[in-house]
Length: 107
Length: 125
Image (cartoon, rainbow over all chains, first blue to last red):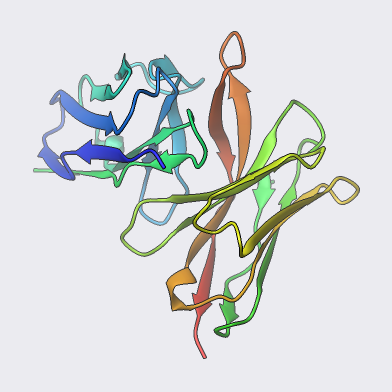
């Protein structure tokens, strides 16, 4: 199975900060990658698919990038509502595999 | 109305079979080229993709679970189901059903764009 490694595992930031989360695949997955946001006690929510395309309704402060093995999710200006854990998910090969998550909290 | 409705929390004894059904409302399991997926998440861990099925019965499973898991679809009831045999404490988790739909201009990306609320399953005697 393809291993997805996310870093950092946790991150403290302030409202208005620019935040970058990285996901690295153990092999080339082209751009078959999605990003998901999960708030405590809730199901994950799709933010980005195809590595860089924002899902409908997702705020434009979120931006996905990368291809091959290295990917990023950038929040350009952190909003209070962004408190959550973020996961990447590869859909290149079965089994689909998630990263272990990046927990974002506020300073 | 919740698009994907999962059952109430479950308590299952070790070695028994876990069965969960997800009801799809506001659309048909047969439409849109969708796959219907199950994902689970143990406490404090990242999600784990378990498998998926299409309305026509095409399925894919995680190799780590393949010998124990079956996903089925009932187009007449507009539901899909998970069966996990021989459960142990390691199967204790929140189980989510989700819709896996093709995205992009060429529909070449799979994305989990609709999720149930999750069902807490506890395996204990």
